[in-house]
Image: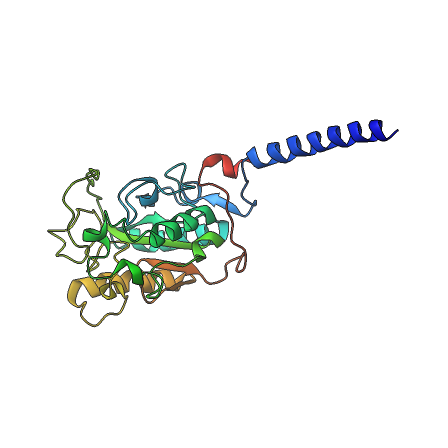
Length: 261
């Protein structure tokens, strides 16, 4: 009897292990409240930086399997309303990042802890010592993006010009350099590039004046009018105030299959 019980235990353990392994291999799915922005607001442009090496890490980020903007339906619908207002004024929105899986945030944290990896410093954080990225709030272990209602975006004047692709290894120019000198982006001049780790990125920094300030304020006031709140330290960062998942951090990958019901 003991021998039979032992065999049964081994079999059950094997089945349990196989089941657990299979569960780990199953792709994580997004809740039904999540949508692809293109399905809601098809005219919004996208430049999904974390699927490319043109970001502050210098490589594609974990969890970004496709250059797709995923958001909660509520946030996407609000962006669609903002887009309608802006198109009437000759502009379009362009998104850089939307929903961000926790595994991507973990990738950022690992990179920030590796003080020897400064391959993109000259462009994205020229004046910030990498050892201070956590202290100064540029990197954190949790991100509002993982809740699905936060978006990083900018404005593009219509008709939108093409943006050339980034070439890995090309000379890097500080993200706060004049718009004619830094990496070319078809967005309007916001005073700094996206993901610029510098106090000049603060939305209302008094050093940013003229057309640059006007551009920031147009983005800010338009998004606030449809229910978004700006993060004061980043002119590009907005969260839908009535977000449906204010305390949940998701980890499904950025891919169409995550939205398959």
